[in-house]
Length: 302
Image (cartoon, rainbow, N blue to C red; front, side, top):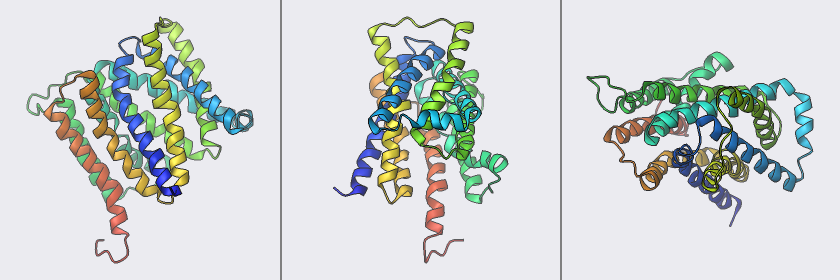
């Protein structure tokens, strides 16, 4: 196989694993509170990323990168994993997985909007139209299709799911200024975020009770949401010469996730979820694919 074919295999592996985590969150939250799950998953991810860097012979980069910008990685760790995953897991704890998944997936639409004030980017007409379409989908999902009564199953859960998109975007915007090794940066963020998690847990909650089933569920989240899957995706991007095409594979994630939610959690997927997710995916397709078509040589669109 050539490097592009290998890249697609790594990318597909990452997409398949990411597609399972929405269901895994709900399973793990049967054993843990949201903050307890953050603790177990982050510890797992720290161990996993450390082993990967050790195998690559790059563990020595950790201290070097940290000493160059300690405050930067401290802030990064506060954003992710502490605030982002705490809020995200709290949303999943309050909402059906299908709703939390769909609402969280709007981060890709929000990112270019937040890049305007924080990075000085301009907002294209495509971005604005995509945002309007996506948030129509959010409204459909949030109301369960009950447009006239404006009935929300869990307003706090919906707000938390949308807040998680803001936190995720802020984390990625903040990390545009990071030129270090990506895996090292993630390990530093998780390691420096850990004290925030532990202190908050001790002040507001309690340490988790670990059974074999609980530990497996928490470690699964740490491995395949935060650790191994991120590395697989980085490898895929490095091996391909068509990163834009690779990024379109991410469109498979929410679709496959709905399948896993139905299969594993036995959730009946509401018609409003299908409709709302369709709006969100259409907005993402418009945002990602239309500019490429417009810029294609010979295109008559403006």
